[in-house]
Image 1 (cartoon, helix red, strand yellow):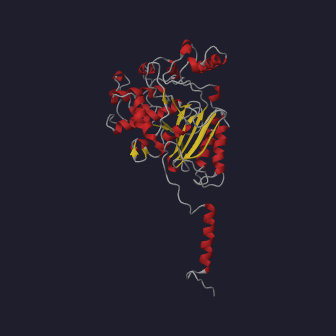
Image 2: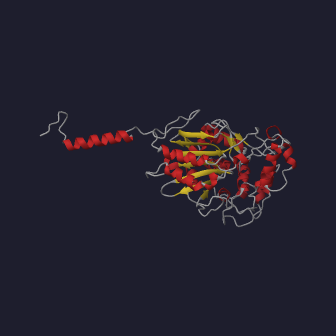
Image 3: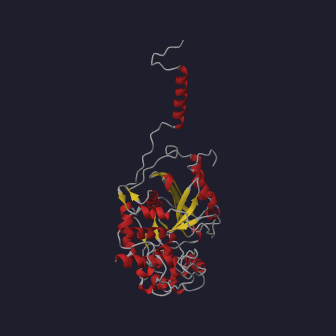
Length: 414
């Protein structure tokens, strides 16, 4: 008969206990949970293994992202900590990137804040309550329809990208007429977002760029940010925020945490909850997988295995957010900042009404290469050249979303 000098405990139970204790030690089962935190001046770092992620899966995500030579930088954040980041040669954590349409998600959040403050009554308010020039066949359109890209405003093939080359972007947006019944169909339209700047100004008496700085950016530590304005000094609420990968991630974390930053509710939780729902799941564009769109955010995946949302910008800029797993992944393309914050085309203004948007972009690049203009001294504008245009990232988009979902999957294979 076996006797224990520790306590009366059957031998078989001790064996089972010791087995699982050893197993748990090897798999870190008994490790303390990683505390959820917010970044201070900088992000604290943590290894993938410590945070409970498979290092091979993390590497796979970054390998996919950097298959595209346009990738400037990418970084993964979990529970408010930096897990891994990578940058192309010549770039680093302090390199600026431009947002393009990721800015739409930033400015849309201001609408939620204004509703919470009583400056705007509801997402279902008619735009005509705020914009006196909408007292025509556009008068029944709602703010929600602007945010969901279902306004019915006229939609050319260029998605109103030509607006970017005009002197006064707001004057351009004001003149766009109704084409279809509001709410009838999804059409991604830059004018919808540009009009938000005027709605916010009429509702608050404060310019949208100042609102963004005061009500969101300063409060989450985004202190190294350029908010571009057009030549007429209108804030561009449809595009063009310059900052770093790590700074973009702060905005992603704000949405991942339901609009809360430490003990302050910055964006109303109700607005976040309405944003992160599956809507418009019948979309099709240059990414041919089922996705959705809601209140100026894209739904990249909405399935049982993962619910991933993203702020999306032209040429492959992304802030991915997985709220259930408190995870943010940022990817940006190569950018060569000209400085400034008010668009000034300099000598390029003589070419800005010629041909398609793509033609103008290529012409600016060629003129710079042959020395007829100096982009960095003659021009002030957010611009993406050939080295910053995504190819593989877009063609591999489904695989990248799969890789993001796999980070928190219990399945053994990638």
